[in-house]
Amino acid sequence: MLHPRISDPKVTRRILHAFGLRASKRFGQNFLVSEAVVDGIVRAADIREGDRVLEIGPGIGTLTQGLLEAGAHVTAVEIDKKLPDVLAETLKGYENFTLIRGDILKTNIRACMGDAPFKVAANLPYYITTPILLGLLEQKLPITELVTMVQREVAERMIARPGSRTYGSLSVAVQYHSRPEIVLHVPRRSFIPAPDVESAVIACHVREEPAVACRDEKMFFRVIKAAFGQRRKTLLNALTGTGKTKDEIRAAFEAAGMDETRRGETLSLEEFARIADVLSDVESDVQGICRSCGGKAADGRME
Ligand code: SAM
Image (cartoon, rainbow, N blue to C red):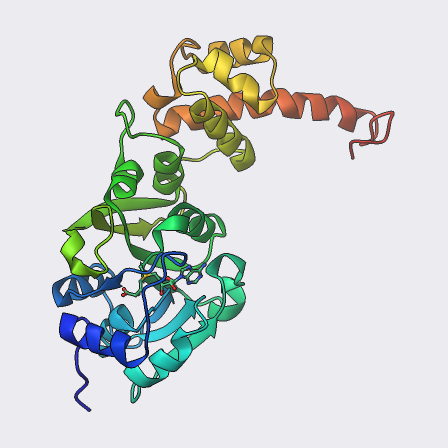
């Protein structure tokens, strides 16, 4: 069956008109109207016949159509109650499409996608870009490629290197789990309605193992949160946000052979891991004492 291209602006306008739809600001709706961008996302995700793909926010089915045409089996999660009826019409005749109506942030993705590897492709709702991306990466789902349209400034933060103005906790978290790469710059005219910001497609090639080995991932992220929560402070001051005392932090920097007067934005992932490892040793030393008294502290708080 030959389907009209939803990405054609005339087709998109016709669909919106036929269903009496208005793009909802609340749901961050900006519909793609560029076949080149749809193709770019499909190519960046290296979609092959039979690939399993999770799409976030299919909208009226524009990117979904590109993914299905490339042979993917698409499971899409959409929050807007008005859209299932539209998708039933715009994607009529395509097999291998499953729609889940709900909020991606509340969806049990592992239950929906199972344990086999899958890819993620999306033109994301910008108001929740960070929780979506970090949620997907931190759950350690069997995702191989994560290709998404995001606000350009967010894409730049994701790929930022130490020492640059845009380097922050998002850069570290994304680069810890993946190798991010900007694959397309997307102008505002590629959407209806045109958004207020420039966009970019970013491909995160998900790593099988994190970029750096750290013994205590929780401490690694506590350090990062504290370091970038107070960007202007030296690490000696900022890392008190981890709950450690200044003496402990000073000792940790000495043991790691690092300078405590540096600021978080200058540290590489390896350096964050090194300082987190030493700081977590301080913690395990305390636990060690408790273990030596039979695994329970006197007040019974620690097991
Ligand atoms: N994929 C379509 C396209 O490229 O034209 C629409 C993209 S639009 C930028 C974002 C989509 O995400 C909308 O369809 C919107 O309703 C949906 N959305 C917004 N918040 C969501 C959420 N929390 N969970 C699932 N979908 C959401």
